[in-house]
Image (cartoon, rainbow, N blue to C red):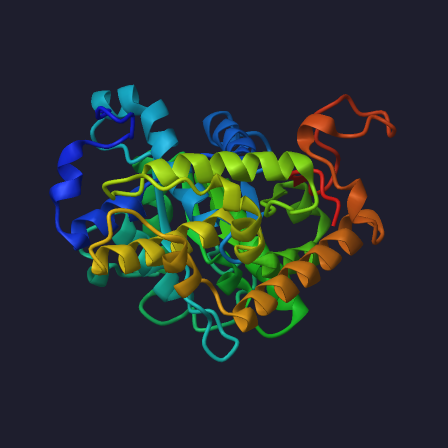
Length: 373
């Protein structure tokens, strides 16, 4: 419903409580170029999977990975809505936020339990391993706390649920925690383990996380051939096309602020872009805090003083910038011999090595926006 002043929410929201107004704004998702490009690729991968069943989506904190994950799940469900109606038992997509490993050991049993709980599986505590070795559940040489709580039975149950509930994709937020393990070899083991689950269930696994996912570059060739990388970058203050996209985000987002008078903030785009480090997720969280400031003051709009009062501190911004710069240096060294300018999107892959435009190369691919530092 669009109200008289062309703002994209019903007038009644302005009469709701502060908590409801904040919840409304928190739930707003603003699509933008960087997310759209990767979202389209992920949906294609889940709808028509190829030999790659594990996808890694990474970027700096606050760049929008969690929003991308939520939009992916929403869009995938919409695509398969007819199948869900005809087969109410199908789930299509599921996901969890991965817990961090304790003491360098990943708890596989806890992981299986969390996955089963997310898929609404019943009687999890009663799954038993009766000694029927239908498959070698530890074929990946797992090292960690994986024997507790009947891990073999839990893994078999999880894989059966994936198959019987017809999961097209399973998403893992904060996926870098999968690799909070001691030793490079164990990282290789983790990827083998994940690849094994994906292969046996034919369920696409999408990992969302920080630059720590780049540790997976150390895996073996077989795992590398069956996985792909997607880099979700921020918007850069020194790139005109990024400036234009960020201004669009500001113009859209300000219309969703549930205050009597919509603010006109686009003239301050440079301030918002610099202080959010070009990350739409950081921008949205910052605006949420500023909105709360204005609502607490019973203001009719969100004022610049509200944004200035709730901006990230210089120390926090510095830390995020350092993580971004370190991550992009690592990314450049892994893909482009230290030259970040050569990183290209799937749509503009260089044909110099005899590949057609857009054709995935042998090994792990990088999909993202052309970066210039």
